[in-house]
Picture 1: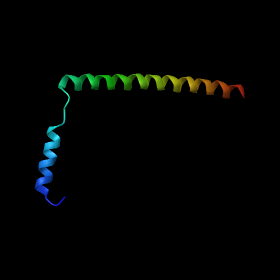
Picture 2: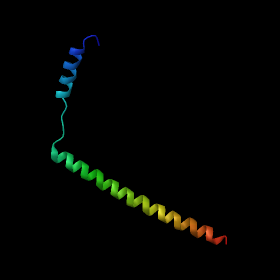
Picture 3: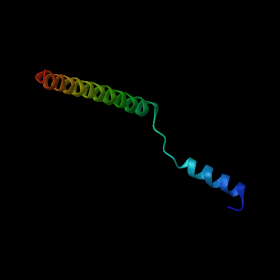
Picture 4: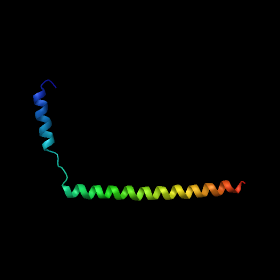
Length: 63
C-alpha cells in the first residue's frame, strides 16, 4: 500500500460494484426481522413462565 491515491481509487471501484437493496427490500427485510424478534420474545417468555411454574410446583412439594 505505497500509494494512498491508488488505494482510494480501488476502494471506490469496489464500492461501485456493490448491489444495494431497494427501499422496498429493506422495509420487507426489516419487518421480517421485527416479526421474528417478536415471535422469539413471546416464545422465550412463555418457556420462562412455564419453567417458573414447574420449579415453583416442585419446590412447594417439599414444604
